[in-house]
Image (cartoon, rainbow, N blue to C red):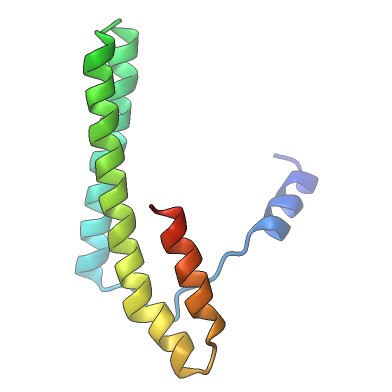
Length: 107
């Protein structure tokens, strides 16, 4: 990637660092879940290569979507319990609107 694309990505990213680090055990569990989801997605790719039945592929897609949704809700829960609480304590009530927007995107 050239420097211009990298700069554009940095400018469009509203990335933040968590003030409270994730607990080691919690981080390990999240990574394990994400690895399983990655395995499911790779399995779907293999099913395509094997010319598997469409219904079987769709069932695996549904399972991967469900797993990813569960993962997202765990991240949202952590966000609400740490980041949102910390920002409210600092007086930043705009974080509530941000949290609501995140919940809408996860529906």
